Length: 231
Image (cartoon, one colour):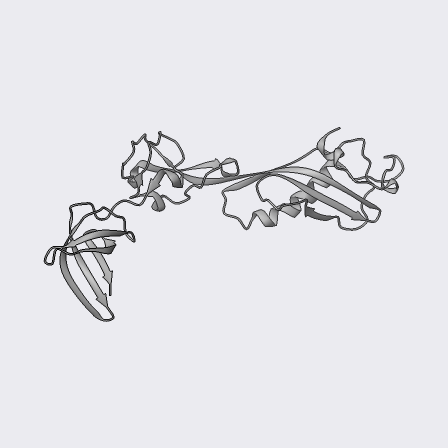
């Protein structure tokens, strides 16, 4: 007995002989599930989806439902991977659980070439490839622009997916760079020369030495060679 029959919940009145009354078949129940899932899958970002509905034990004879079959998820609602779908009929009264497998395919960013750690990724090294994202365990990128210009934190092999934990924002300022320190107080902006004591990406806070006063301050990287100190 397969999974579907193991979960079947039936009343005696719903178990009928095929030659007595019309019965639901695999195709009709499968279509009910597809019609339930398709509108929900249309709302998620994807290239395409594939839904495989589990087989119903042919020994189960479910009388043809005289009303629209009620459909819902059993337990946690997932729009990918293995799910259990509950079907309920009120006339005649029966209920059954049927497993389904939802496969989601999307275009994700991959590296076209092998690159070592601490490599700045240019757009020419990247490409989009369709993969089954419902089988992935890590966060990925859907847009090359999100990855271009980042720096690898580990080696990436050619044709491999670029996961978010494989890259970091590239440093806009490096240790030892001369920078312009902008001190902002309302509409007043004061500029002075500084020396970066740490490297940092845009938005990160680093230590900078004021060249004139030799005072060490913390400033936020605003861009290449630019840091800001809110007053």
